[in-house]
Image (cartoon, rainbow, N blue to C red; front, side, top):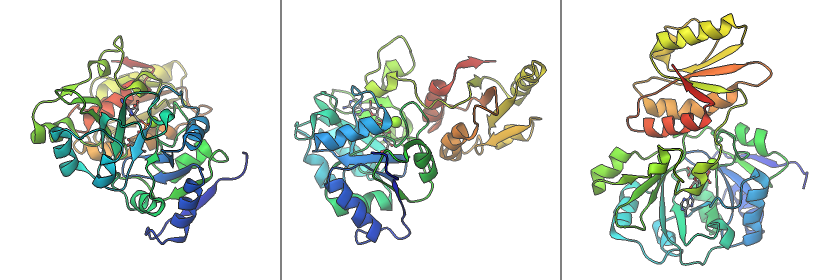
Length: 343
Ligand code: TXA
Ligand code: MG
């Protein structure tokens, strides 16, 4: 298919909206549609339809052993695809959904096999976004939806990012404006004795622990030599077009690196907080918000990673952020995006 993708701007999301209806029809016919969630844009298809799900993998160029998250409209629907909901999962669902939390549970094998890449478990979430919810209600289907980027690139936080990556490869794109969280959902495995965070994201470890007590974090997240339990975490991810160096240290450390690269004749771009930006002398600075408001940094991060094009720059230098709260997710993504860590 090399047809143009239908680009539909949603101004007033309701199930009766003309474009929500059209998108819903496409999904029922087994087509793929990109839509906004509160975290990043997703690329959705009917999770019960194997052929429809196969189109997601094809459009993104995604490895088929990487399972997809299933999106549903409400808590009732979450129950339909799992064998049981353990008590901790129940409490997490009550508190954090709709919201940026994906819960891994034992699948009852009613969804298409390629959604879960053959695993016995399934990841499910209820997105907290009016367009996503209106679409889920209108089509009344579970929607398998990974982030709507070309595999390997940073996830899309605007409709324009999706259009750049997937125009002509998907049936439709719903534009609901920029997403508010900016990094993907937290993935937590609730199938074992103690819940395990497989991917840090929009709901923080602190948030989770204040509700259910201590949880584990997949050791594979910190140690590259271990095999991560979340299959998706092992692939190259979030990579900008220009090599990114993650700089440890303060604004002065970054300035030293800028100067050193410039002396070698390199064209340097910088991604930093506004506090660091105020102290730097550099030609091309992308500010991502305040170091004291990491939610703001998360919201702007992927747009900054996509901002610099390879014909214009040799290297991106990026600040290291604190690991507090959503800082865990920010640093997880930046470490994966980085060619190396310096300073
Ligand atoms: O915020 C989000 O989660 C976004 C929006 C669109 O909802 N979606 C998203 O999907 O980030 P994706 O496919 O880009 O990332 C899904 C992650 C991958 O790391 C995958 O390996 C993991 O979730 N995952 C999915 N099902 C799993 C399962 N059954 N067991 C372990 N990990 C799983
Ligand atoms: Mg993704």
